[in-house]
Amino acid sequence: MKALPDDVVAYQRTPEFTEQSVPAGLLNSHSTKAGVWGKIVVVAGTLTYRILEPVIEEVLLTPELPGVVEPTVKHEVAPHDGVRFYVEFHRAAPPQ
Image 1 (spheres, rainbow, N blue to C red):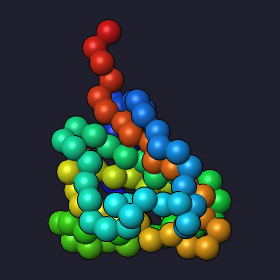
Image 2: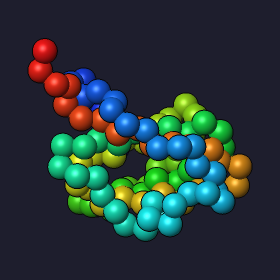
Image 3: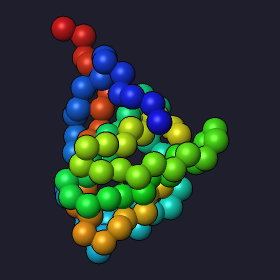
């Protein structure tokens, strides 16, 4: 799993999800747009994060270990009982 680049800033955030409220689209293969990074922040519990390309990588996310979503890379999540998480979206900082 990659790290967020230093030159990106958060611009949007999802509501907090649980295993009951996670949108179906997050449970299946999906991706962000070009130039958009994601940061999966686990507030409580654990969440399995699967990066589906270029090779499959599976990471157990915790409050201490957020997930990083690279632009356009297919991925999915699998919630565990008691999980609470949200996704922050990041992009290049606007010029000043």
